[in-house]
Image (cartoon, rainbow, N blue to C red; front, side):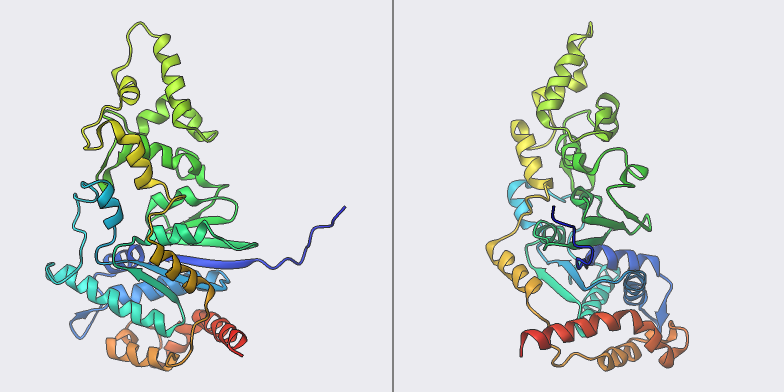
Length: 347
C-alpha cells in the first residue's frame, strides 16, 4: 500500500477581481484626500490587498481587470447584456467615474512595481480569466478568489474558496450554506432559470431564486440538473387540481427576455464559468502570464515609495515616510519569490 506524502508541497495562489476591489476601495474611502485630490481608492486597494497577504501566505498573486469593452463576447450572444448599467469608466463619464478610472490606472502601476501579475484584455471580463485559471489548477494548488461577484462562487470546491468583499468573509465549500441558500454547484442552474438582475439577464417569467428554493429545497442538498427540475415539476403538477402557472412557465420557457425558446441554452453560455468566454489569443496570453516569470528589471519598492510620496499616501499611513516600510512588509515575501523564480528560470 502506497503511503500518502505528508510533505507534499501545497501552492497557494490569490486571484483578485481588480475592478471589484477598486470599486469597493474607492467607495469605502470616500473621504480620504491629499491636497484636495481623492486618493481613497488607491490607498484602500493597497490596504485591503496587504491585509489579505498579511493573513495568508501566497506564493503568487494575480489581479485580473475588465477591459474597456469587456463583456463583448456575452453581448454577441445576448444584446441586452449589462444594458442596465453604465459599463465604461472612460472620458465620456462624469468626473466621479473619471476619478475612479484614474485611480484604477494608478493602482495598476503600483501592482507592476510590487511584482503582482496582472492581465487585461479589451473584450474579456475578469471573472472569465479567473475561471480559466481555476479550471486549469496545477497539482496541489489552493486558490483564494477576492471579489464581490457572487457568480464566482460557482467555482468553489475543495481547492477553491472565495473572499467575498462585502461579507468580509472567506466562503468555502464547508461554510457556503452559512451564507447562501443553495450549494455552490447549483448556482449556475439557479441563474440559468431565474436570470441575473445585476447583469440584466432575463430569466423565466415569475421565477426567482426564492421561488426555486420553495419548490426545490434539494438545491441545498445535492447538485441538480434542468432535467431533474422538469421531471419534478411534472410530479408536482400531477398531484394538484390546478397547475401552477409559474412552474409551467419553466417547462414552456416563458420569458420577457429576447432569448425566447433558447433561454436555457443562452443563459447557460452567459453564466457558466466552467466554460469561460475567452478568445484563443487571451488563452495564450493567460498561459504565458501563469507560467512565465516576472522580469525584475525596472521594478523596485523605491519606485513605490516615490509614487506614494507623489500621490500623498504618506498622509494616510501611520508613521509617514518611515511607516511605508511596515506598510509594504506583506508584499516583500512575494517580491522575493518572484525574483527567485526569475533567477531560477533564466540561468
